[in-house]
Length: 237
Image (cartoon, rainbow, N blue to C red):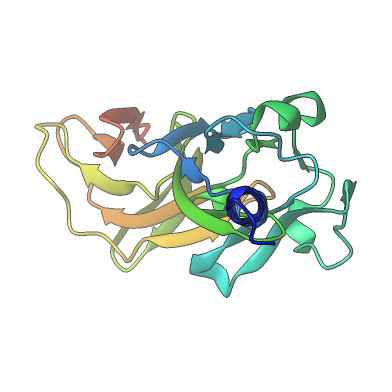
């Protein structure tokens, strides 16, 4: 007895259903196109979202620094934080938003921003059958303190002055000026880093006593459009 073809139709429907269920649940990652600006010492959020807004609770979420040999910033796997191999500079300073994972939000919270946090980050998300990644740029900024000028005494036929300013990012430029605002020839700028990986700049100059005995140290950060200046008067004999 020949069938009426209904059994073949059922078989086709079943196969189509199985195929649709087994297809990978594809997604994209949305991140900001512009750099995320982070003030040194503050907290910052690096946005990373799934599109569509499916749950990431059972996925792997990994944040790394591609510009630092893929140093591990944060790893979420098997519904747990797996940060045994995390870069030491990020320990105790990173977290996801657990309640937001179900909404497809895999953004990273970074606390106590340092100068070394400046750069590129990769947000990598993987399900059982699909993965994507995207890049977020972070730009750290810090405006330093007013320059401090001190006398180093008489040397090389003149008077040595030292200027120092701390707490800058990115690295600023330091110049010496006479009383009329003209740039003075000075020694090389010495650059150091503090505990927050911010810049300390120092520069010496040898000056001659003149009519005013007034000299200025100016620190410029052109990217931030910031300037600090201190005037120094050499006392008369």
